Image (spheres, rainbow, N blue to C red):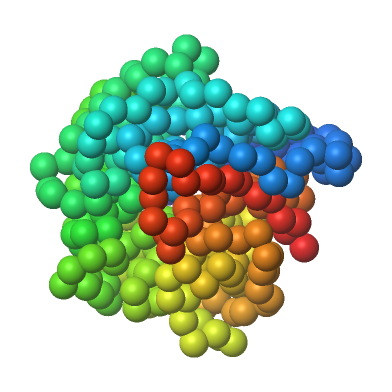
Length: 315
């Protein structure tokens, strides 16, 4: 069910309560998972040549992972590591960022294909496909209010589509203010929400900066980093309360920051490393774990190249 806030950009009391209920539901499930996941695998294989990029987890013990190779989506049972394809790929397709809503709809960024797709995970059928007119790389995605927000890594613009089964269309919000766009290559990458729910957080990978973005205007403000010079190669973002986890892909590192409510500053708390990291891109949380996919960008991709996903404790 899609929740409609009292304004397009600030969550209503119903949305906040709904989010709190959802968080409580996840927490309850996470409590069970926390006890049970001691025996759950912390590493599981993906099909050869899959080239994972995005990962999303709901309240249940299932992870959805997208393929950069062809746009297919795979579901894995986190209790066993066993998985199956739930959305077939196609030539020229890609699935980068993924986000699963409470109603079972999975929102999929299309990378270089420039598409945005919506998969109903109860039927494994697409319910909507959007094609922005701005050429670029639709990279990552976050749920915010009654809409879904996507970054474009090749252009200073955000895309937003309605949550649920509404079809009021795709919108574009140009990035401005202090935003810095690289002349070529990747700029905007991972996206999250601020702790107070009033803005978005976007990481700019090549310059290693975090930005607080007003979703109504696209005005970006540099977030002051304390204890860290930058977050170069920042990719996926995960926020748990006032704690922000930044996956720095080619550094094989997760940097953990404490945020103030408005995300004006980010203070380094610790870093997480693991010898199993092989260019992790995005992460998703269940219980006391973060699950990450290894994109292996430093390994030439072939149909025989092996890939996997790993889990690390939140600590």
